[in-house]
Image (tube, one colour):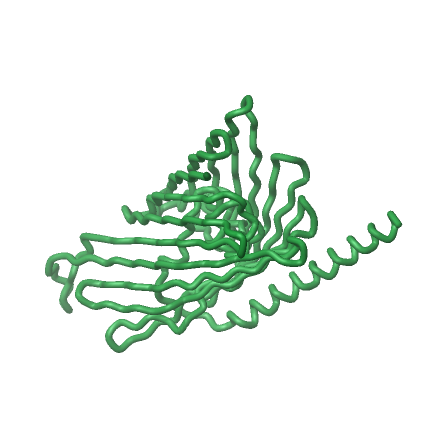
Length: 313
């Protein structure tokens, strides 16, 4: 009986790993055409925890911020959770992120909001002469739902987002959707895949740009309690495939405090120097209050830092 259970577990993992490989190849085919996409603010990583781990977060399911990478990760939350993030981006650009998740008897519901604005953009005429300044604003407001099935082994999630952008006096709007699933092969091993920012695009005046649609697939492995590792493969429609890897080690300090330390690396984001690397840390108090920080260098473009506050109740 023990040998049968072991064989059955190995067979299921082999099947799921095969499915994982198929999804990566399918994602490459789906996003095969390259070009310039619009609504680029949707590609900025909001979660400090995920950013510090090289954005290898598709298979994680213990954080409301997982909706950004895979809405199926919401399904396993057992507490209400609210998270606020301030992202200090390059060249003085900053954006804010809010997500709130509520578990119910019929699944987990989530609201998420991304805001980005830029002021002081110099306006020039055909000769290059300055004609004052103007601003730009971007907003994505979403509602998500996720649930688990097959005794919690699988979960699926959907996030529908309303998009709004303004540049000077011109505006554009659109609808985008995210879909994903996660398989919990065991208590220490997850596989996940998602399709993000699928939609018809945004149109300014007479010119329409496609959304930055991305296919993601990833794994999460916890070899020992308190130590988690992630590996992701991503295929956007406007760039080559890239990969992310990250790790998180949580240090307990008594019964009340936990200090997570994180690091990661993401390919395709190198701009010289140590760009591509990422690091971060956090403080968790009694499992209900969490403060997170991440640092992601981008060489000549400058460093990005993120601060997050999460409450669970």
